[in-house]
Every structure is written in structure tokens, then in C-alpha cells.
Image 1 (spheres, rainbow, N blue to C red):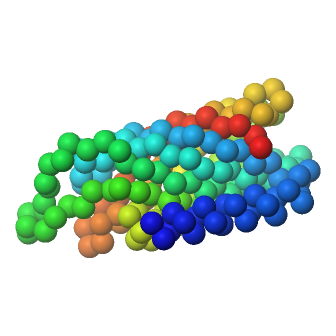
Image 2: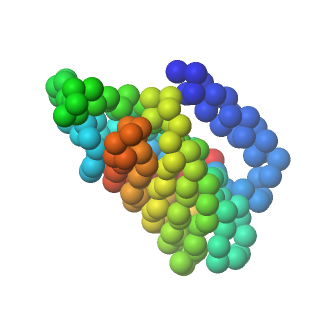
Length: 174
């Protein structure tokens, strides 16, 4: 809960500061749905819903910096207890909060590829994360559709099991 509060506070502060750079930074607020592809406890983590911000520096260059912040809640679960062969519990995912940054490649005016990487907090525990994706923008670039693949490395310490999910998001420029 503390991480979600800090993420909201950080995003709010960034949004207030962003108002001073109105012409240099493009910010999209997005809603995202993520389906789990690979996870040791996939039945208890089948999908999630989330909200986030995507900040992109406006320039005419081919490569632009991008920063993505998002928070996800896993609402569905089959409520089945799963364990490793040694008898320890395989934990479920309740929340994921991401702080990612990286390059955005402008393929055309309305198609962008991005490869942000950074930190993902899984139930409050920090892990490395990456979320490459493709962005499809409207003609005035007010609306954005994104298809991405989210990977959180070593979700459960000691097992080297990764979380992988496919995400779809729709966003509106602020």
C-alpha cells in the first residue's frame, strides 16, 4: 500500500511539474488490461487491470526518451493453494507497480516502438522489469493504443521464475 501511495504522489508531482514543459513533453493517461502468459501461480494471477502514465519527450528525432509509470491490480483468482515440491507456498500477485524508462523509436508519425526497462514492485518487492511494445497513435496523436509484453524477472526469489504477460492499453493525451 505504501508503494502505491508513493507512486501516486510521484505521478502527481510529475504531472504538476510537467505543466511547465507543456510543449516539450507529451503525457498519456492509459488504462491497461494484462493477461498472464507465464507465472508459477498462473491460476491465481490470470489477468490484471491497471492505470498509468506514459511520458514522451517531443522531438523530431528518430529515438526519443520515454518514461512509463503504472499500477495494476489482480482481481481474478481460482483460490487454489499451490506449492513448490519442497512444500513452500507459491505466492499470488496482488499488485504490480512499475517505474520504467527507455528509448522510443519513431517508425512513422503514428507508429512507435518502445523498449522501457526498470523496476517493478510485485506485492511491494522490487524486481527488474521490461515492457517492450508497439504504440499506434491517432492522427492528432491524442489517442494511443499499445500492445506490449511485460516481463518481471525472478518474481519468486530463488526459483528464477519470471512473470510474463501480454498487455493491451488505450490512452488519452493530457
